[in-house]
Structure formats: C-alpha cells, structure tokens
Amino acid sequence: MNVRRRLISGSAIAAVTALGLGTLSACSDSSAASGDTGKFDVVASFYPMAYLAERIGGDHVHVTTLTSPGQEPHDLEISPRQIGGLERSDAVLYLKGLQPSVDKAVDQSPVKTKIDAATMTTLEEHGTEAGGHAAEHEGHDHEAENGKDPHIWLDPVRYAEVAQGVGRAFEKADPDHAADYKKNTATLVKQLDELNTDFQEGLAHTRSKVFITTHAAFGYLAERYGLTEEAISGLDPESEPSGARVRELQKLAHADGVPTVFYETLVSDKTAKTVAGDAGLKTDVLDPVEGITKRSRGQDYLAVQRANLKALQSALGSK
Image (cartoon, rainbow, N blue to C red; front, side):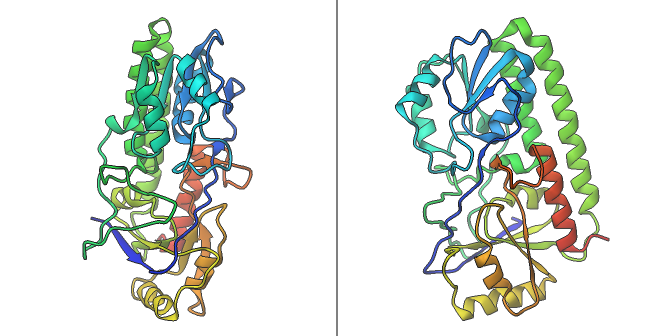
C-alpha cells in the first residue's frame, strides 16, 4: 500500500474544507429545492458528484447540492427542507459512506433513481499503516463505515469509471435524452483520460516519491502514480505538535528528500509551518477538490487537479 500514516497524539486537525458548486452552470442550485423544474431533477451530495451531474446532464438536468460552499462534507446534517427537495427529485447522486446523514436520507427517500458512486469503482483501505494503527481524525472521518477510503474522485481513472456509471444511470432514468448523456459522458471521460496521462507523464521522473500532507485524502492518487502519502494525522491547526514529533517528521522529510509540507486551501497553514519548522521545508496547497471557492486554484475539478499536479511536480522535483 502506498499510503503511510504518522499519528501525532493529543491533537486533531480541524479540517475546514472548502465546498461548493463554484462555477457550475446556471441551472445548478445549491438550495436543494428540487422538483417540478421541467428538467431531470438531480440532487447531488457534494461538489464532485454535482460536477459529474452537470457535465453529463448538460442542459437537460437541474442540479442541486446538499453541501453548500464552505461547508465540511463529512459532517453534513441535512435539513428538513433539503429532505423535502430530495423526495421531490428525479434522482440522487451520492457517495455512500462519506456522509452518514445523506446515506440515511437516501435510504428513507422515495426517490426512484438512487445513484451510488461507490458502486461504480473499487474502494480500498488507506487508513492503516504497517503497525496496524488506524488513522483517526477528530470531527473528520476519512473512512467509510466499511473501512474503505471514500476519496475516489482524486484518482482520475476511478473518477472516469464513476462518470461512465453515472452516464448509464442517466440514460436509463431519462431515456428521451440518452444520446446526449452518452455523448457528454464520452467527452468528460476523454478529458479525465487526458488528465490521467498528464499525471502519469508529469510524475514519471521525480527526485522524490514521497509527499507530506495534513489531509489524508490522497491515497488513491498516490497509489495511481507510484507515490507515497505521509499524512500528518491528529494535529489541531491551532496547536503546536510536540518537539519530538516535529523532529521525527523533519527527519523523515530529509531522509525521503521531501522539501514541502502540503495543507488545504481553507485550512490554516500553521500546522504545516510547524512541521516545516527550522528544517528549511516549504509549505504549499494540495487541494482535495471537495468544493470550489474563490480561493481554489481553478474554477472546476479539472483546473484544480492540474494545479495539484503542478504543486506535486514542484515538491517532488520533476525532471
């Protein structure tokens, strides 16, 4: 497994993740007030699902999202109004195991078409290191209930598999527009294939294969491109880790030739700077693409992922 965990006891990362629909098209709506729009009404659980629905559905869909801009997806609690919108929708697109309140609402909803992205690709366990200790995050569960890592959208290949599954589901649920859904899916999958090629070629020859990040979200990406993620689990951004732990991570960074500690766009860089310390390490953003905000390095999934690639190339010493 290409994911290692370093648990720093006594604190936790309060990951405030930037979520939202950002630049999705005009027929997208974050209010989750679905139903009776004259289009194929789709409720998406959070940004990566809404992006698929918008790209595949095009002009034929009206997309609402249950997770608002700036809202942390894992701890989402659905409102009665959102539940009402879900019940009036034609379809729901979600990732089972990521948001428990969404899973419960979908299970209890009469909505006819329930599309679970987790069934369209393979999920793996990324939360256990060699010693058998699970990575724990206060207030931010990075594993689905079955112990599988839900961050499949960060791997362009898995995300393309999900896109193909969503396309098939849309074709079946709204056959009048099946041809357009098929065409839009093919276009998106081609772009994701190109993104995968860019990552493969861009990370094929690097000085180092190890990167350090405060968010343990990049296991699939690391595995896909032969990298190793060092996740700094259990650190509160506002607190200082122990000197011994900082020295341990600094030693690891130097041993593996790691010059950069990554943090998220909307999370304080204090923890990353603490780990970087006096060791001459830099800090930079690696975005888990759980949402698009004005601070994102790009206006949609593809743009932010390419910004991530650029950041990784710089940190790993692309040749």
